[in-house]
Length: 377
Image (cartoon, rainbow, N blue to C red; front, side, top):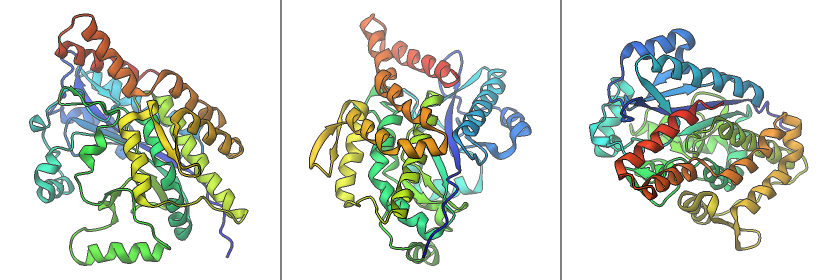
């Protein structure tokens, strides 16, 4: 049966850390008035996160990347301007370079209390933030079909977004340390393959009826059918410090979804691979980011990441043109040339140490850069 072409709308959610503009430390108990003022302007588009030293923004449903850009500028600017009045600044990164999770407090909301009770010490360690992007795919079975195929591209998107090289004051040697923390939670990582939305629901309902989860929002895979909206939600990415990087990744993913649907109309599809193989690429993206290579499964060999991105750009050009986001897709080359946030953070840290600074000074210089870059539109 023919399936109506999806709208491919998008919505972007980003989680920021809140830091003291003078000490660069996390603000473990930000004033309630600050959040209230943000919500006076944009309601639930700006909301608290599990850890009090974080804040989350979410765009409206956007029909194209231009609308998403306007939304991100609006929301990043609002949080930055209001927070600045309290000597606080948001930083768009998936870990704070040296903050200690034991010193943080949970937000007093019932959902978060339940998380803390369920996961105990694991929940306390969740001093991480991510970028989640929703894509409007109205047909439920198409949602599952495209999700199954899209898993191949998750490591590529992760490598472009990496922004969590530090943890507890140490350079971890990984470009994305965030997922090593998040992987401790149940129902994370790559999703199971499903043949239909009905099969997906049957499996989720086993967990619901057993009293393990209340609903499907407690499934935190790298990509999932949204539990609230008619969307597929990408969750694998780190938060991008540079806003244009966020938009480039969002545009590339939108174009990939469009490409997969286009193949379907031509009676073709992207080949699906075993989770064990995809997990190897996921790990390589976490460890090496842009500097490494991923397995090209068609060739059966490691291929440098820049070559893979060039192939993806060529593959989705006609889709990006139709969606009106070709320039943003081409801007992925800028990320390759200058590096992602993790590159910049580690470079600033190493340059500071080479200049004779103490480690604590070097780490604070990283935070200082993150503050500036987060609102460098």
